[in-house]
Image 1 (spheres, rainbow, N blue to C red):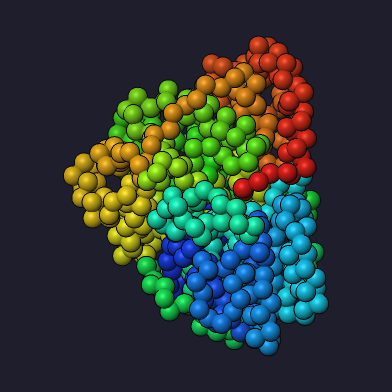
Image 2 (image 1 turned 90 degrees about the horizontal axis):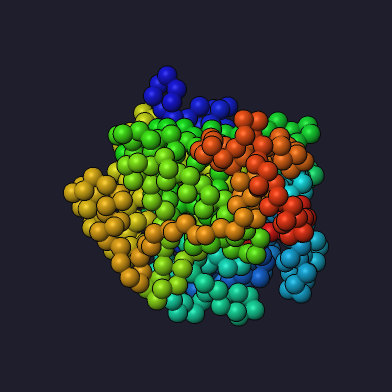
Length: 523
């Protein structure tokens, strides 16, 4: 913390700190799509859609929009431009990830129409290191309202907080069903939206687009149906910008995570798609060793989506958790997975951190090395230690308790009462969890030697673009500080692990090659 006792320090663990007249956390894409659609309907001048993915075919608003516009997001964008003369809509998405979706017939037709439309502008963002991605998920409307979080406007994201087993609307554009999905974002109004607009316009320009002007006379875009949880606060914006030629890197999110862990007094609650970051694990390990340190509760999916991620992310998670248990004599670390009433695992894509009743962070970054050094990321932070935010501790706690209530199929009052009685998040969860819709504890799986080696050497989750081309002897192993007895003094791996690596060469080369071409899913 800085000399004033607050967490945020521009230039170190955040980019900017800006006022917000209103702000709310939105959980799951049903509410997000409805809110985004309502805000876009109010736009007069400029809409910036910046994301890892954007699929024009998805239903926009849960299939029950009643505003006169088309149901599909691509058609809605074109309709909105026609309806609103002077409105310019800019769509920026990661270039490599676009390969999979660009060649759907409906998408090609929609792009052809956008090319002819002077009000709709589409760019593919290739301004990232090899194997990196543009991973920010930000929407800005007239520099008045912005969304920043973890939800992309793409397939397989829509769900409600009920996460019903038999939800008929949870289908892909071709009608195929997909599983329950948990996610989160924020809606913010005021100067913070203008700042996020500046970030998006800068991203548009470095991707090869022209300079875009800020909006000076836009609309009041806050949607009437959304209730503000926060009013008249200050919000920090933290970024990851990878190191590249002629680009100043920003590692604010990495510093922020370490500071959040050090700041925690009682409870560190997080939701993350991955748990694979060496820096995050080392910071947690340091706190677990303290006799009176805080509890750490992390909610995450049972396994990463795709065919490549489980090898990289799940293996690293297992190795880190196994090592952290050695640093946890007081049993203060728990990892859980949410399940539906029928026993289906709910995929956790949300990226949320709540520290005590003091700090709320929501964004695009996960607890993995890519998010801290290789991919572009954007998070927002509300710190109740700042004078303007001093009355928001109850709001921050209620957001955490609401998430726990959702996962444990109970209500906020029950969560609050249990925490007050036990003084423990872990005991509260253990008291309330059960069969069906609930949280289930993570169990460290058995790993074969090749997967251990891949995880320990961060083959598929490097700490930045430099490690992509660095020899293994030059890398800092995943567990070096957590389990130093497994490594030589120079940081190199043991001869036994080297032999394992040779034995797994064919598979390793194939996997690394795939990663280098960026053929990843479900970011």
